[in-house]
Amino acid sequence: MSELLQVNGQTIAAKDIIPLLAGYQMLPHLWREIVIDQAIAPFTCTPEEKDFGYQQFCAQNQINSEATQQAWLAHHGMTLEQLEALATRSIRIDKFKQETWGHKLESYYLSRKSQLDKVVYSLIRIKDMGLAQELYFRIKEGEQSFGEVAKTYSQGPEAQTNGLIGMVEMSTPNPAVARLLSLSQPGQVHPPIVIGEWVVIVQMEQFVPSQLDEAMQQRLLNELFAGWLQEQLAAVSSANPLNALNTTAK
Image 1 (cartoon, rainbow, N blue to C red):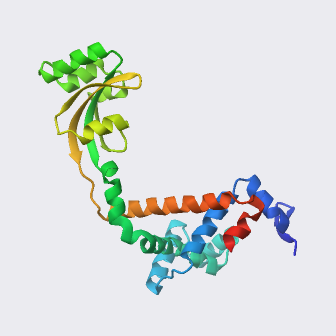
Image 2 (tube, one colour):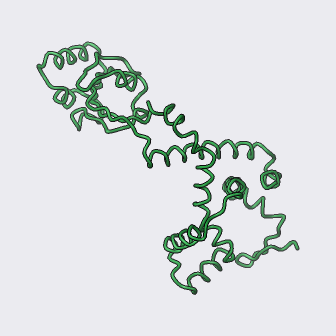
Image 3 (cartoon, rainbow, N blue to C red):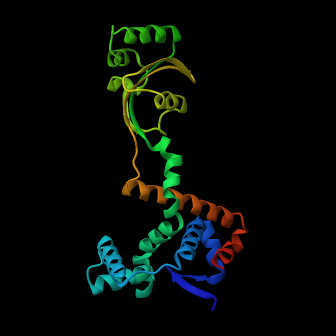
């Protein structure tokens, strides 16, 4: 059967679907969902998980009666079975993540810890090395506080906060600044260094180590999943676009 559906009086044939999806830039999204469905296919939910997922989905989509359910299904062109599968999809994705990477979380966390630790620091940036040296010695000798100098002389937005920046993860600052901070103690001021067009003076204020708590575990699982998915999609998109769906769905 060549006719697939009618849209505003236009008949769309099956052979036209892929070109239409490509034209609307929707193929990558379709590939993504197919790849995910392939990965989570072996994972099932308990009756309790199904009920929880369904109730959550209905609440999020304001499905609060049989009538609104039927209207939602009609609007999306879905069956009740498809709705129920969609409602538990996030649960099955979480099971896939845990099964695939849960045992690797500790080692992955340790490899990322130096970037996940948080810091509060102060910064002064100007473009004159001679002035920067003078300001550094004023701070070191206690003639002026770091905040006073930053407010008066710093040429970046940090001047509005007396030089104070944070709390931010160690992956946020410029890599050269991050290296200084990783070797610093609270209150330590570093001599001026050149970073690009700026001369920078940095002072460590506070260091807060990250922890592999529940929230961090979920974040890392999401990172690993995103990296895996990107690799899968790169392989799919490198195929002929007209054959990609067949290649992915096998």
